[in-house]
Image (cartoon, rainbow, N blue to C red; front, side, top):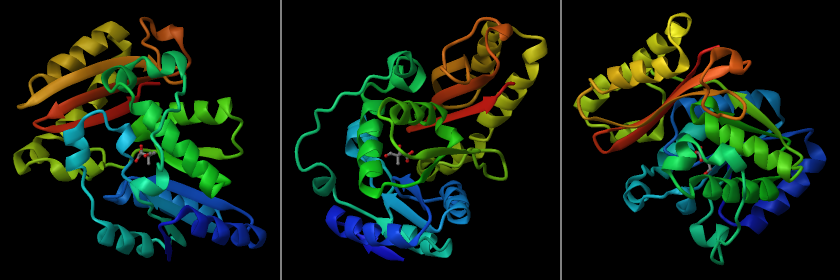
Length: 280
Ligand code: PAF
């Protein structure tokens, strides 16, 4: 695997590669890689001739300085894992390399950024859009791979690609879970042992909640899920939402949309976790 820290070096190598390869698959990450990332890498590797990954903890998408400071970083482990899935190229820039000047770009994603993560983490999606747009311009991938655990991020990135007519296919990949159901996340590393033991309850409650679709209205489902989550020790809920699966707007009737998902964000102790599940 070739590793680049400088944009120019990466671009000259990719320019030459583009003449030789039929397609470049790209998986942007913030490192602290886990099986969820590796599944994205495997799929990207299988569907493209060249696999490019990036590891960059993007400071401008953190709306909480403690979260940024505590974000797990272990580049040597990441390199080992990337090599285990035969990643061809790793881009691992510094903050100065990515943002030599203060970032002032403002994107507008309308109602998509006003709900859930957008409402609870002001500026987060703007920061995601800035870095993803810049990475797409640097790497110019044919396909880019994102996990459905960050379902709203996926919708924002699709909208970014649509608004700027970016020539990249966005590939959505299912959430990868631990054997006990906990959605894989780099932040899981920060859970205390006792929190890790109870964390799978989140998915159990989501699954049960979604299965009650025939007996509960969307509003009742939100209330049922919230009530169950509140019983988990040390759980502080940011939101429980039932929304359509395209615009991600809250729904009040099941016949309001062709697809719906149940979303949660909560703190377990100090660690903020998100998860979501398809209702129909
Ligand atoms: O999902 C993530 O890890 C990040 O939000 C991303 C897409 C790599 C942008 O920093």
